Image 1 (cartoon, rainbow, N blue to C red):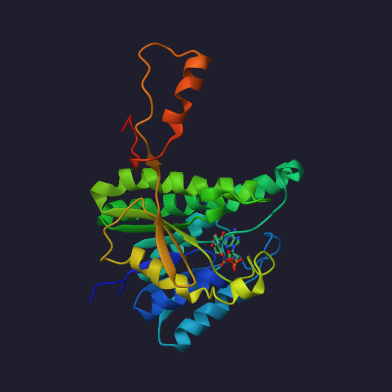
Image 2: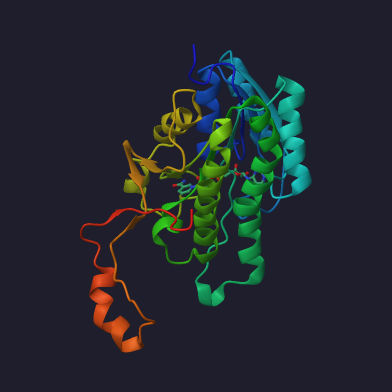
Length: 287
Ligand code: NAD
């Protein structure tokens, strides 16, 4: 039975919220899951083992297979140790869900370098470290699945989340290139932009909205992106509260200048340059 049966899947930040749901579902569907969580607070402070341990116990109690891992995926060593844990316990790694995340919100005017850097380190650098550590196994076995946690805050912007939005859209840039470089080795790289009631959103969205956003609604979508059936790559999917849809970049025909245009000539063509009617999916003109 394909799906995710017997696949070894690493889920970062799986000690609570969305990651926990991903881990529970994958294990229920027969995957061997590494439940990674540093066990700290929402802002990234602190650490502990109980979050990952609790999820692993839940999985085992339900008859599934999982091991806990408490490494900090924001570091190269932590990510290497995490992937080593998958290999030591289950022989290889078939998939990585880079879901770990922290929040350090604040308007850009008040955005300190520390709050900027901490968020980049966990989301963007963490993605780089964990996927990079798994990449040789994916290539060697001609099979790999990557899902990164993006966000509508990165895709569309959100007040107070300049650091977070930049990191999240950075992850979309990452999977776009991983999809190209991984194609010949059957490595697929996609992004989920979830909407769910977790500790991350508990004081951000109104309760009436959060009541309609149980994290379990997102897990099946991520599970599909991890599965053998999935053939899509470089796809960004928004999922929450039962609605699942794709977000993609489009480009229009624009304007063509045969000589370097003056500012006035650009201004004269601005409507043509920005009008998106008739736009089509975008592509790298240099690719
Ligand atoms: P969450 O806080 O419950 O989960 C994040 C987990 O990551 C926590 O358990 C935390 O301990 C862990 N973590 C943090 N730093 C870590 C590190 N350095 N190493 C290992 N683990 C670490 O929040 P969530 O809502 O479940 O978020 C999961 C992912 O989804 C995050 O990347 C988040 O940005 C993204 N996301 C969530 C929403 C939403 O609506 N909840 C929306 C958009 C994006």
